[in-house]
Image (tube, rainbow, N blue to C red):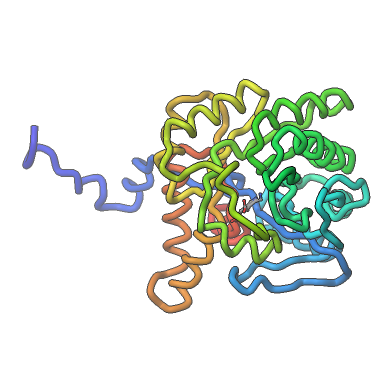
Amino acid sequence: MGFPLNRMRRLRRKTQFREMVKETSLSADDFILPLFARPGEGIRKKVSSMPGVFQMSVDTLAEECDAAFSDGVRAVILFGIPEHKDALGTEAYSDDGIIPRSIRSIKKQTPDIIVVTDVCMCEYTDHGHCGIIKDGEVDNDATLELLAKESLSHARAGADMVAPSDMMDGRVGYIRNALDNEGYENVPIMSYSAKFVSGFYGPFRDAAESPPQFGDRKSYQMDPSNRREAMREIALDIEEGADIVMIKPAMPYLDIIRDASNTFNIPIAAYQVSGEYSMIHAAATNGWIDLDTIMKESLTSIKRAGADMILTYFARKAARMFK
Ligand code: PBG
């Protein structure tokens, strides 16, 4: 049944045929745009390692969301840079913190945009770790209470969904319980389930001003070598009540996305992280690759691997392209 009976090129000869047999398509509603909120007014501060990405004050952020919504972006995920940081990350769970204020301002201007909030301590602690420190270590169980308080402050301000990214054990169940007890049983949880220790987060830590001040994140984020363990992490989060599970980073972990999509019946998100974005931009700026082509190819590969949705700094541009 080989050649010449079979000619794979027959269906490649015309655009219409190619469109007919296309197995993976992108659309504007696949993308979630990450945004960085900071104190002040009228601020739009460039993140030097991420072209086209800014830290924005609450007012500017609301305008950005409105413009993104017009581009076809249906959802944003918010990261906050607080006024000041301390050991317990107190601004993370204040009802008047940077994220609750951002949510209210965005919802006022663009009520229909889905506002997801990143739930983590690293942007709010002076030591930059994702939980609180006891005896030189990130204390898992003591951190859960703070993450629950943070999630509640976001839900009270009108967040549509919360997304814990800290990688503490048991946090999905703990947050679910806290939300349910306060009457937020309809607020879904998108869990960063398989989040790997990664050099690809480098530019983000400039953007969110959140690098760990000592040590690294190896005692809570996953070892990039591990595939079976990622399935266990995801299974546990599903048991604890996660509505969407996330794999992060995306392109270096396409096998994990594929495994997850073969194994679980739950929506899967993938995060094309800062380093992935910055690398593509850097190469394009040098004229070594074409930005639009690589953007499209990278997003297609992530979706083809099995992601139902993609968190990406390209969201606005991609939404315009695939509207
Ligand atoms: C915070 C968090 C990080 C990212 C998302 N949430 C950084 C980290 O874990 O150090 C990275 C996102 C990106 O690189 O775009 N916990």
